[in-house]
Amino acid sequence: MTPFADRKPAFIASPDMVAALIREGVVDRPSSGKRDLAIIQAAFNHWSGESGRDLTAISRVLAMSVDSSPRASQSGRSRRQPA
Image 1: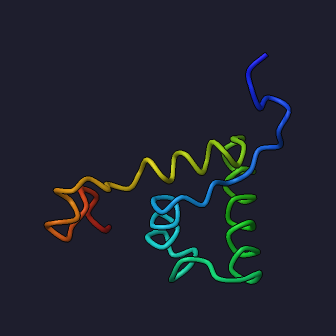
Image 2 (image 1 turned 120 degrees about the vertical axis):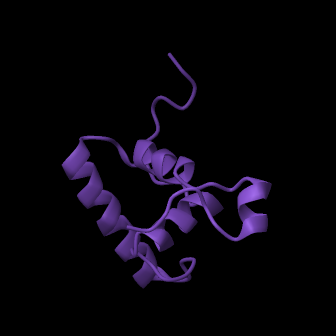
């Protein structure tokens, strides 16, 4: 049995995950209250329903989709170009 296996999946509000939520238009700034958290929860519930993934997995994918390398922040651009 792995550590924490009995814990309920939940999203992890890391800086990169929040940056991805802003990029995707879920929120327009880092969350600051119950209303923002409800909007984020609804987005995660929607993505979970579409993908079959739990909230923790979705959170990780979002965080890994953000280029937070020093080179990206110096140029002011990420690798992903807007559509």
